[in-house]
Amino acid sequence: MGIWLELGVFGLVFVFAFWQMHDVRKAQEQTRLQRAREKAALEAAENKDAKREESVQTP
Image 1 (cartoon, helix red, strand yellow):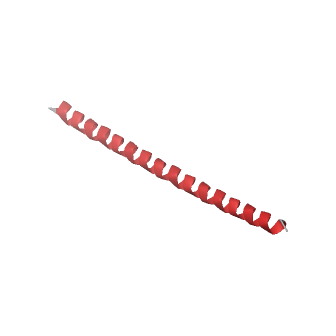
Image 2 (image 1 turned 135 degrees about the vertical axis):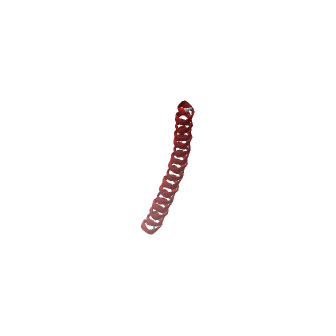
Image 3 (image 1 turned 60 degrees about the vertical axis):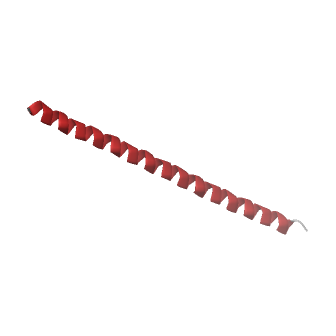
């Protein structure tokens, strides 16, 4: 009977570990998307500044 208790606890730990890995992967994807958005916004701002400088320098 004790083996079933141990197997049940092991099963719960196993399920919990998979659940945590799922959450970690989801958080990593959100971080990756956020960094991509920030990079795109930064590049857009730099391009806008570069175009403004070109129009100021060109008479």
